[in-house]
Image (tube, rainbow, N blue to C red; front, side, top):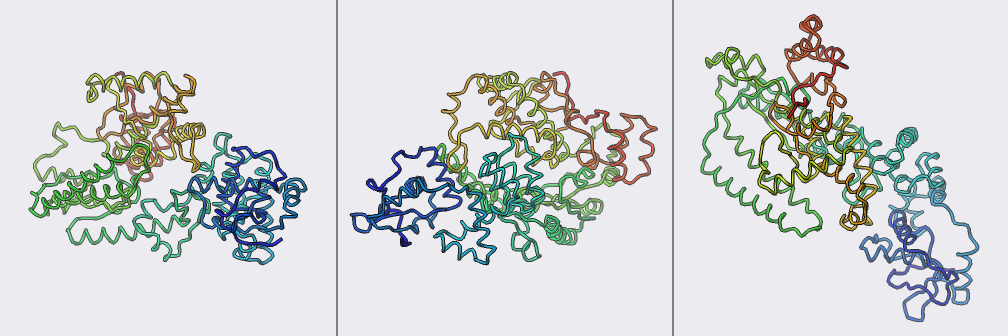
Length: 619
């Protein structure tokens, strides 16, 4: 036998020298194609010369040939597999070679193949040497070596058929065997999915699309000594990079924002400047003093006109995208950039007097797109009172209603409330059907913009990301866990293409029974609830929550992170007094705010106290 390189297009299946008469099933070929896509060809095809000049007939490896052509037809064939290293035999022994491969052998399990590659590496052979020997790309060897380094107990689970290859691939993101085994043990059967495994193994890392990473840049992180973990099996929509030193990322972000804050404070004469890395960092201690807005200059008006035109053109491009066409993220990135530029112009119009600046300051933070956000004119409660007295409008003596919670905290609380109601609604298909029918009926009969007590707020798109953005504490909440459980369940049920993406659902829904459709409808409707609000009233979703019998206190607790660190110390004392009495609250008065918040968390545990945005009332 001789090893030669042949283009895939020059290979055909031999009709006369095939010992195997029964063809592999399409399902087997599809599974084999996925294996070849991830790991390459594990065993050379055996060929003999064809009567057609320059072509070769495959006498052993017909299944692999079909799988390769399947990848080629779907546009997924890796470049390094377009030319193959094959074993050339004489025509006289072609049938015998086919018979030998199909009869005189015991199939080697892929797990054993991974370990065999590892053994070669341990003998001193380089990745390139192994790749050249087997006629595969170096990345294929690297992937097999990664798989070989997964915990032996998990490799055995895979070998026994109790774990999919995709799940095994997910474990390669972390080489720590104890963590791998702990994660697998913690998963319920419905969570045996690569997404769950990766998320648990990388929860202490930052991906490259994290807002802090977008701000500082990957190069700055590397130059500062930061390490990166790479997922060799990442999907097409991910670069598979995970930044391991999250503390370093935060430090670099803090340094960058501190430099900006010091410059703004000096240039604009503010009393103070503060960096806020997380939305929970004392943001509730400040209130913004309303600025005076200047008139637009001619240059600003011209710039706004150009930006509005660009914004409309981009929006038109989105509208013109054909149904089911691939998304074009660059358009949405441009839209985001245009919006930021428009916002920047309007913020330039806001002015504060020097008298106001002497008592107020600036907060610098990072938004979800990785852009620096500057909020000017922030005042502590004491400074705000001084300003009001200076203006002759002492609000302590006025009848004006004061905000208890900042807009940011109100958004956080209402986002948690939305998540709670969503989690409850997912478990009540009949209620979800009633909610959706009410929404469609309101829109159809002209009441879609009503704001009465029974109006239903639904945005027919996934609102989960908005909840995470509005509420930094939502990701770790009981409601978020429940929603994720339902999402994973349905993701497993829905049809997918070769890349694991959900395909058109109409053929699937038409084949489901009514009970399944109602359960799926409940999940979709609940995921579309739009309840994030700025005003300090009961939830706009109150009319949905009340008939569900929803009890938010079973889902949310007033902890330091969720509430107490976001309000003033006076408010902390007020809440404890309201729930437990003045005597219990008295020890909090001399404490620093942070200590008072921690003590209040202990005192309020189990009391079922709720702030107004989390209360349910009779509609």
